[in-house]
Image (cartoon, rainbow, N blue to C red; front, top):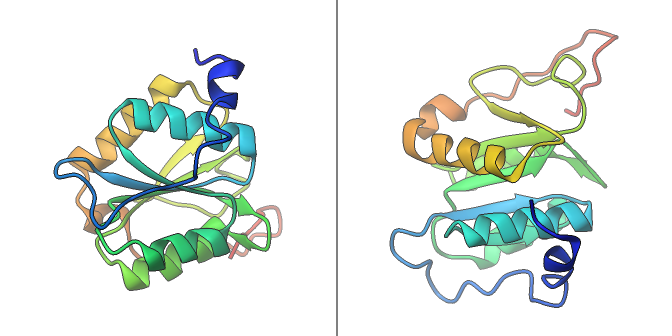
Length: 164
């Protein structure tokens, strides 16, 4: 488990410093989480595993990072519920500009509460760092983007919270 002290040490670091290109063989992950502590912890876990991480606290920040980052972004890891937006709207906009982008949604809400259906990848909060790494590795190594992305479903059930 990662200590709070280790997570806090990432707060003073810049959110991203990609340079002109990602290092070869180092997948780039765009991480979008509005909860600072969780975002910093996930960023630390992913970077320690060798991933290049661009971290954002909201959808607008993520879109700006994506615009400024010229190299390939391999995976979007986004909370479904974000201030001023939501993960699904953000994913739609990013996939329009980056069709090979794979998507992993995370949320504290159960899947029956959120309008997400396969083949999209979903990770229920809370999760252990090892579970995050296993899921990311699985998506990046085993799932072609055509299996992960596609039209984002929207449920209209009145008992289901739709973020669309």
